[in-house]
Image 1 (cartoon, rainbow, N blue to C red):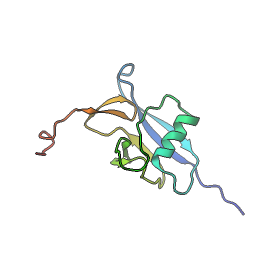
Image 2 (image 1 turned 180 degrees about the vertical axis):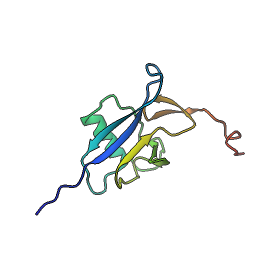
Image 3 (image 1 turned 180 degrees about the horizontal axis):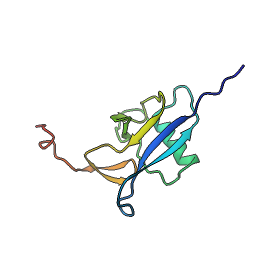
Image 4 (image 1 turned 90 degrees about the horizontal axis):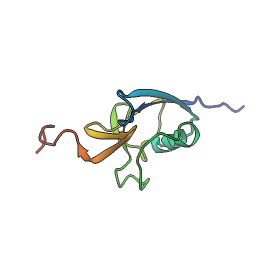
Length: 118
C-alpha cells in the first residue's frame, strides 16, 4: 500500500520596498519529496504558485553563497539545505531587501564593526 507524504507548509516573508509599507507572510503547500533542497522548494513555489517570488541563486553547488536565506531562523545556503519538515523562509538579516528573499549583498545595513567584528 502506498502512502502519500504530507505536504510541506512553507511560510515566506514577502516584501517589495517599492510598493509595500510592511512585510507580510504568505503560506504555500509544496509536495514533500526525499532529499528536496530549500532551493528546489523555492523554485517550485515560483514555478507553480507565485511567479512574483524573488530569490537569488547561481551555482546550485554550495560554493557561490548567493542563495543564502534564513531558514527557520538560521542563515543557510538554500541549495545545500535539505528540507526536513515545514519551513519559514526570510531574507538574510543586515542587508537591504531588494524584494522578498533577495537582498543587496553590496549594501549591508550594519557594518562589521557595529556587529562586534574587526
